[in-house]
Length: 171
Length: 457
Image (cartoon, rainbow over all chains, first blue to last red):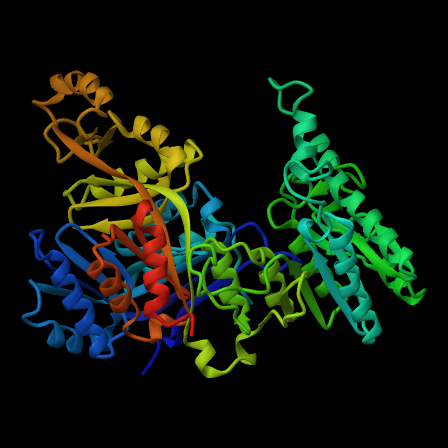
């Protein structure tokens, strides 16, 4: 099974490593070949049960998912594009409507102590808007913010983010 | 010359008995043929006479109304480690082993000029090497360095490294000296699968990758500071976490390529961290949503409020803030007005969005909303209802490459929800899955997940 990390990289930029890693954002990279799926689960008393069924079905079908987010009436996640059909098949009838959007790329912004950077989300949001890249999903951790955007706009997004964070293209 | 860096925390030095145990570790390393380089933290914790917090309190007491200058604060804080090095060096000397105490500057640790949170730029370890050549055991102050000569900063101004500073010093010295390893001595016998106070069956891990330990540390466990793990990872220095007070082997921390495949894809532990408030804002206009979101982020940034667990959904967006920041965030959001697309003038698709928090928390909204009334014939005036869940905490499952291993999220969700623990939101990265749960359920959630993934076995 191909992993998300092994997908072709559209590009990567990074700040040269010094003795201790620089504070702030030091790399932006993209991973192509992804899709975003939204499954309706309703907001009634059976919401949790439907969420359990969705996650269990995907697990039993050996479909890796990420950028998982819970919404009042739905669950959304990302997966590799070539797994979308299998995912739709295994989810059929388990919950509500299932919608998928393909041709997406994951733009990953990496920083040291991301959660100490108060303005990082503003910069990312402005850069994506400047690039015309609509955001389909987002995930954040202590060292990354990952944004799911249309592949057609991923390169422009990287250009804007690179400029905004003062990174230089790697040789 | 096989250099071994050994770092001892404050609790390893806070009594003659503990110092003797720490010295014993150093002497054992030397007798085994290593050239030990010792890094020490300040002695004891808050309340102890030379603990960093005690020294800081002393300076703050001079004028409680005025914060001490960062430069002088760093000079004060650095004293704790200077005392420790002298005490540790004297302890080793008393036991018949030549030792030399070195401040961060004397050890050649050069930092930038950010007082209180300096970053190590370079290390010139000539004095350490010379001491080793002379047969001495260098005892170096953790947590501190000095600035280099630039036009902006004076030469040799004392700086401190901020959180995790002594671990960072140890790791950085390990890299600079091309050490065979860095041993972090503490009062626990290694990296645990969970907080043993919460999970009595928590186990000590034999081996851990740099990424795992950095993730564990970021997600709440106080083992090795992530900065130290990152330096060790970047320079390929093996790390060990061991107990000063036992002879147990501890936890080896190494590169991904040095561990078995099953270690690369496994659940390592369960952690918990943070006291959070989770804010949900409803806005349905897809075209306007990014602009409104941006204004919210900008507002939070201006107020120095970090946001996390950011979520975009079809009917709104959500994020979490530290609970101590929530009152400020709430007051800033309530009644906030965001104009979107009004440049084209009246009767365009522009709108004014006004934030309305839950009843009882919407005083500013109730004052602001009538002021927008005159604009209603010209523009849409749209309420953005907001609600918050104020008593959340994050429980995280550390799972290497779980994105390649389907089922981890399903197992977490089933375990918690079947036990009646609500999950308000989730966040996942390459190394972990985090769930926002009620704070009063944190212990139960950690124990259930620890059992579910059989981490005590």
